[in-house]
Image 1 (cartoon, rainbow, N blue to C red):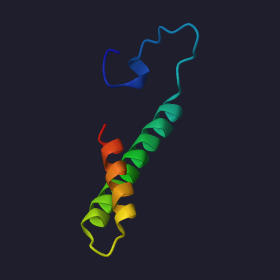
Image 2 (spheres, rainbow, N blue to C red; image 1 turned 90 degrees about the horizontal axis):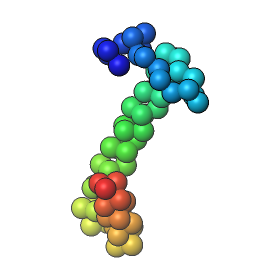
Image 3 (cartoon, rainbow, N blue to C red; image 1 turned 90 degrees about the vertical axis):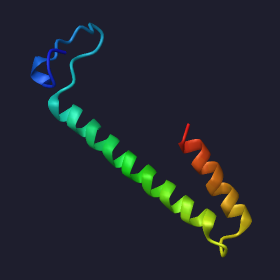
Image 4 (tube, rainbow, N blue to C red; image 1 turned 135 degrees about the vertical axis):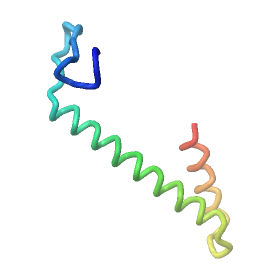
Length: 71
């Protein structure tokens, strides 16, 4: 890649075709949505762990979720 532009991307792979700008943008948006969803789950897990009204088994599930997401 010679710059941050898809138009200047030199595609060397002979088995796959170069993705279109729309495909790249779709993948980028999916990544952004995934990151947003992960952060929301982590925030809720942190709240649940600190909440005394949440049952212990749910707290354990949330702690495991936090550990798995931080790998």
